[in-house]
Structures are given as structure tokens and as C-alpha cells.
Image (tube, rainbow, N blue to C red; front, side, top):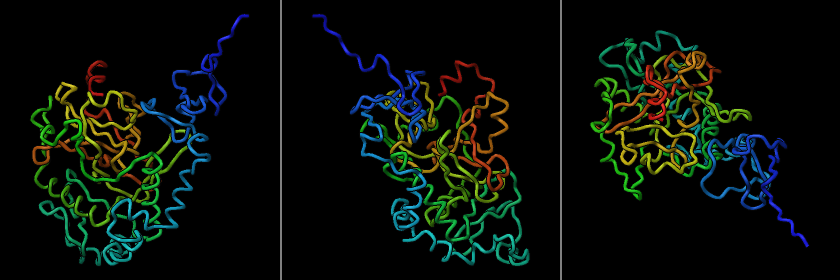
Length: 362
């Protein structure tokens, strides 16, 4: 008798699109051995997972959609506050508590009332205290601008619900607004020394450092930029502006787990950000927001080697030295209007470099 060896992987097709093309991008469920393209599953998976992967059926049946998760959070807003460590048990209370201050920025607010509350524009004192919040009040176009949150309670709560839903949907375990060092693998803050970078990581002006400090204080008080996270079946998560934001408005700091490039070789993350480039993968640092982080990972990056892509970019990233430590901030590079999708230029600063040099910078 002749035996026949059955190879379940010889003819492998995607269960979603029924195609066997791009077989190197087909994930195989570790439970049922079914195949799925990385771009056919939801959420889209950019890199092949290094650990066990199960399809939706084997992972427990029907997966809740992003919209379902947002609706669930809106029904129990305390879950939003709990995940974000928000200063109010219900995010909508933020708008009620700060109503008098937020009304100053209403389109219907009288100019005289705004001037009386904020005072004249200034170059030397770019921020003012309005109630318990800091607001920008400057005519200097080189300075960062503090974001103004949405003032309508339900809209504000819903934008925060989309942020939390997106983070949970992607499997993020913890929300944070600071760099978290991978000490278990020997990565400490002492390694994040801007003097070790191959290029000069310039400091911010003293005034802009002050604006950044006020931004972080506002964040602790519950101030988030007027944006929401949108999940598109074709391209994944994107960020949409819900109100006008002038040029140089701070969107967020890029934070997450800090590790070395060497430690990240087997990561499946699609959202790594260069923090420090020493030229050595053992000491060069990246930010990995896979498990810990904030909304920064959801801004779409574009490649500025393409003219069309460059035109779409309306957000820039800026590395800077803050007390000798490297930090990364994303801010608007032009005025952003309601309904605009946010795209940042992840290759900014690499103009003029060869392809090999671009590859070395990630």
C-alpha cells in the first residue's frame, strides 16, 4: 500500500477573501489551522505576530466591533474614566465643571468677553490661566499652541470613548502619558541621554518648554485635543479633527514602552517610533506603544518621499531635549479644520538622505 502524506499548508487560502495570493501574509490559526491574510482580519495586523495567534472563531466566537465597544463605553462612562485615570467619574462632568472657561472659546462668545477673560495677545507670556485650565494667548507663530477641548459634554465624552475603544481594540493593556522604560531588559532612563544621539537633538526654547509643561498639566486636569478615533475597514484606525486647530497645536506626546532596537527585532508592532539613535542597536532606543501608550499610535504616518503624501501631511513629529532626556511630540504643521484626518510625516528630517540611510533610521 502506498501512503499519502496530507499537508494542510500546501494549498492555503484566506478564509475571508478566498484567495491564496500573498501567502507570506497569510496568518495560520494555531488552533484550527485556517488561514487569514493580515490585511483581511479586523483589526488589520501589519506584522506577523511572534506569539500564538487565534482566529476570531477559536478566540471565542464573534468579536465585538469597534462601534460596539464605543457604544458600550458610552453606556458606562465610568469605564472611560477608569481606563484613562480621568479626574471625573464621568467625562461629561469635565465640561460641566469647566463650562465658564470653555464658553469663552465658543464661536458665539463676544470678542469683548474673550478679551476681558484672556487679556491681550503676548509674545513673552504665551499661556494664561483661565479658571483651572491653561490656555494659549500668543501671536508668536513659532510657539506651540495648547489644544482646546470640546465643550459639549456628550461630544467630549464620545471622543474619549473612541480613544479608549481603539486602545482596547488593539490590545493595549495600560494607558499612559509618560515614557515607560523596559527595566526587565536592562533599559533605563539613563540610556535616554540626548548627548548620545548621532545627531544633535536640539532643546526647545524656554518659552516652548513652558508651553509643553502647561500641556502636561492640562492633560492631568482632563484636557484632550478635539479629535476622535475612527476605524476604517480598509485602512484601519485614523484620527479625525472635531474642531479647528491652528498651526502648531500640540496633539500628543508619543509615549509607550522604551526599549532598544535590538530587543525589538521580534516585535509585531506597527507603531514603533525612534527615540534615540546612537548608531548601535544595543543602545538605540525606540518607543513601542503595543501594550502601554496613548492615542499617538493611531495617527497615520505618511512617507515624505512622495509629493502626494507630503501634501497630505498636517502633523509633524519633533524630537527635543527635556532635562537631558529625549522626548517626541506630535503637533499640527498647518491649520486643521473639522473633518480633516490627521497624517504625520514620519520621515521628516530625512530629506536628502540616500535610501540606505533612510532604511537605517527605520
